Structure formats: C-alpha cells, structure tokens
Image 1 (cartoon, rainbow, N blue to C red):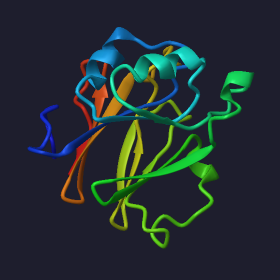
Image 2 (cartoon, rainbow, N blue to C red; image 1 turned 60 degrees about the vertical axis):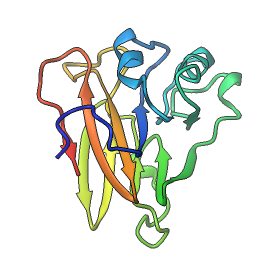
Image 3 (cartoon, rainbow, N blue to C red; image 1 turned 45 degrees about the horizontal axis):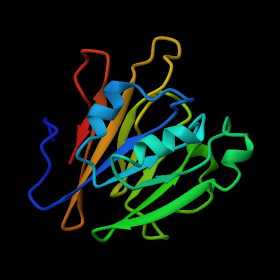
Image 4 (spheres, helix red, strand yellow; image 1 turned 90 degrees about the horizontal axis):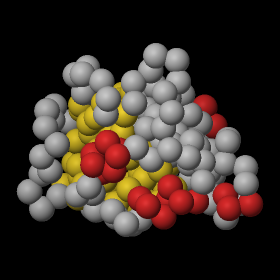
Length: 171
C-alpha cells in the first residue's frame, strides 16, 4: 500500500479526476501537480476544465452523461491508453463497460459517475473510481486519485481533498 503521494523512482505519475461538473477546485489542481498525464473520467462540465488541466499535464478525457454541449461532441465515450506497458481503459459509467478487460489485455479500468471513490483489485485488474472533484453530492467525499506506474507495476491512491478520512491505496 502506498501511503504518501511520493512517486516511485523514475516511474510515471498519472492524475485521475472525474465529475468536475464545471468546477475545478484549487485542491484538485494542487493534488494533480507533478502528474505526467491526467485522465478525466467524464462529467467534465465545460471545455475550460480540460484546458486548465492541460496546463498541468497532457489530458485524456472521456465524455460523461452530463457532457451534452457542442463542446463535448468530439470527446470520446471511452479511451484506452498504455503507459509503461500498462493498459488503462477509461469510461464514465462502469456498468457500460462493453469489453472483457482481461481478454483485452487491460490492467486498469477507470470510471466515474457515482461520485463515490473506490479501489478494487479483481482477477489481477485494478478498478478505480476517483470519486468526484466537483460540487459535493450528498455526503460523499471530494477526491481525485493518482496512479503510479513503474516497470508495468501499478500503485493507486485516492486522495480526499477536503476531508480528513484516510486515503484508499492499493499496490
């Protein structure tokens, strides 16, 4: 388990954010600084969110169910990226996953939508929801996540931005 935001030596740090709904909090920006890549799992809210994130690191984003404006039409519903021999599949709603990650060679599946952060290891694959970094919904935490990839090994951590709860982490 990774207990700090320290990145593995010579590894790649990937910031993961979702459900900003047009609000990019300063705490989220601070948590994502140092990322080599940022993945946004949908419900972005407006193009300016992606533009601001892109000042930190290159951004790969997927369209969420609330991203309905003309600005969002060119954003794909799913995206697959490979970082240091780790294949990551990104979509907004986990139940809309249309492929078998294991047979597709995917090691990490990232989704948003629920606003509830989660990290789960299943059959050698990591399923990550960074939670919501935008407006608070119900009593759920405000959070982002970081993936640390080195030599095809992934460490993950959910970072609570406004709450004092212990972060979730998996190695």
